[in-house]
Image (tube, one colour):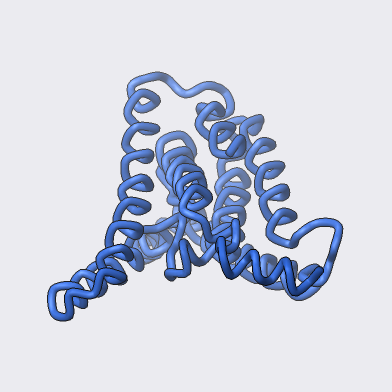
Amino acid sequence: MQTSSASKRLLHGQMSESFVTAMFLSLSGGLQDAYTYFFRGKVYANAQTGNIVLLSQHLFTGDFLTALHYLIPLVAFASGILAAELFREHFQSLKALHWRQMIVLAEILLLFSVGFFPQELNLLANAIVSFSCAMQVQTFRKVNGYAYASTMCIGNMRSGMEALAVWIVKHDPKALRKVSIIWTSSSCLAWVRALAGWPWSILPPGPSGGPACCWSSASR
């Protein structure tokens, strides 16, 4: 039975690495960043380089209270990566439920709860969303066998252009397939941020900061 299951995975690929799964994860990742940036004080949920830049800026200007708003998501993001790895180590042999499914369930519950937080709890809300983003990006790291990040674009741009260079030089059809998969996924991530942010940016935020955007991310 185990041999048969392994053969099926080799033939069809893991569900967690499928292109459809990557699309849903990209939608979720884009919505999470749009949500925290537009509704929770212009803090990034997963673009932690941006948070580091803003953190440094406020530290050097002596605005330590504002700097805290960028430091806490950074710590939460790092904690989310650690939590995902501990999940994998402790539950990867579990038969009843796959450890990745447990991560997704935890992420859905966390994101859904954040939608109820008032604006006064933006710091906690951003921390939870960053924690959730980190678990997602650490848990789902491939699409159709290719390295991929579902919540950020820089690494995907690098691997996509690297594959394009291989195709130009060697005319390898596998490299062209990788280009199409990586860039389609990254485009989805970019467009969903724009589409999620545009309508909500022209509307006044609700008491919980436009929860529909966060709930949409959780519902995937």
